[in-house]
Image 1 (cartoon, rainbow, N blue to C red):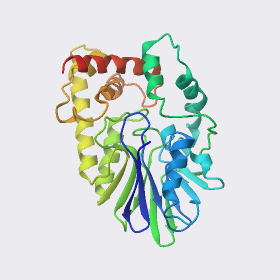
Image 2 (tube, one colour):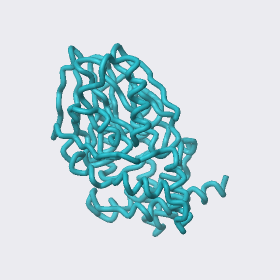
Image 3 (tube, rainbow, N blue to C red):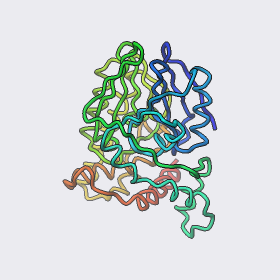
Length: 314
């Protein structure tokens, strides 16, 4: 595993995983007032490695965790912080059971799927080990915001969903001019949205810019400034516009995802994930609610088809 600890301000750190696609998320640490960790990782081995990095700068493990949302790659390591207060939005806590580490481990370990798309997905999971994970959701629940005084460091936990998911929060350190975004921001990698709307996601990105941070720690990808959320908002606006154009022409979402010219975004990792964003646009154009369930098995299978189609045109 490739992991790096970076100091971004006095007593403030980011633990960054090299962006390799599925699951390689980031975390943060405010090493004051008992410590606050922003997000854990997708499995216990990666979270233990994260803790080893943080242990080089803290005197004892953090007493608080803030989960930016419920996806496993941001919270399935929570149990390793025994006795810590876990903070999150109430919709984040309510969604904790939507993803199952036991099923992920089964997929990872099964060699004979009888389905090439599932076999590809299982191969992508081989770097992870979901054994022993006990879902440990937030118990300190927020609605709009929570302000913390971490021994003189003011931290604001702000609700910005439903955007990437229903329960998205960001963590803002106003004096240090730092924002930990969770998956509101994917930097130089193709975003995926689960529940939420384009309008709310773009508004969340605008809110990050309005906070005026010098340093942004994204949910995935490298550190950046406000150019990160500005560029991702431009991507979302472009995909939404192109999706409407293709939808108006009677083109399926799958075919649109194959044909949309990615232009300056073509170099982002996993460009085939555009399908998730096209599907979201099509659902909105059909007037479906933002939390309409989607068939992830079909989507991941179709993503494979988009990847093959785009590779064939290079």
